[in-house]
Image 1 (tube, rainbow, N blue to C red):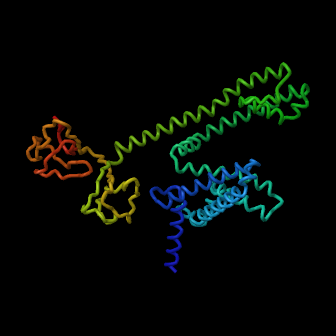
Image 2 (cartoon, rainbow, N blue to C red):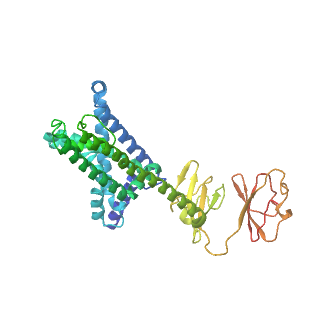
Image 3 (spheres, helix red, strand yellow):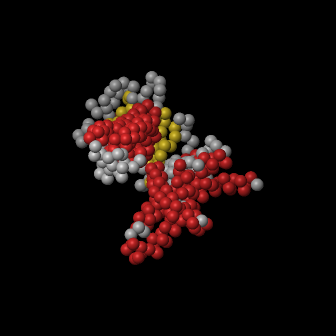
Length: 400
């Protein structure tokens, strides 16, 4: 029984890794992301093209097939996310995690992206209304937000500034309502066919405040035109409020990201690149077998053009570039590490390390030569282009 439970949990975890937008460096997950994006684009393109009669006459069957296949993919995607919701919300029980996904914004959008397509089969009378619900597929475009940092910044700005934006929308709504009632009172007798009720005033006020000005309804009385002039000026200022809020939010968000990056570089972690060569002791070993000391970890692995997340089961291969990370020292005893590259005419070029003139307070840690990391043995001859990493307890300059 326990074995069956473990197998089930392993399967659901694999499903979650497949459909999740939070997994980085997993080939299967990346392939699924590409397929999801292609399916969404094809579905929206087919829905758009089916509004043209000449296109439907020529490739209508192909468009219907594309729509059927992509909608089936959306249904499978929803089912997989439904099954693996417990891993999306690990802090909740499986039942609560599933309900949270079902009633979340993404869950509702995922459901509406395929359900209206099949509902007319069960309820033919409501086919027209169900077709309207298919517009929810457009909202699936927001899932692309998870793959691109620029879109993520937009969503973060809207979320951080939602209170200010709601306040500005409230002010605009109050102004529209007041303007509509005022304009209706001034223009109803002069234009009963245009300003028939308060909703006609709302339509005009919205067009005027948002500086659209369709021209289908406009005031003809003197007082109505004066009010219209005032509303138009107010509209310019009202529309500028949410624009300024969003602009300020972008500046704040990018400034926050910049500060986080700088803080991380200066205070959080120190990084070291290690190039695995043929025959190295780490070649062919799993990450969990390296036996790294506490405080030192493998941050990322670069393998050719791929970036791998260093999980315990990942095996290191010759040619891998391993980035090690360690916590920066918070005490007073900080290492004074210096890197010096031997350029042309440097006096150390062609000399062995044991023969170079260097202070007793300076210790050579390593020599970087192309992609190789060399131990600074006494008989190692230095060459042009070598980069020397040294530790010094005194403020000295190695290139003097």
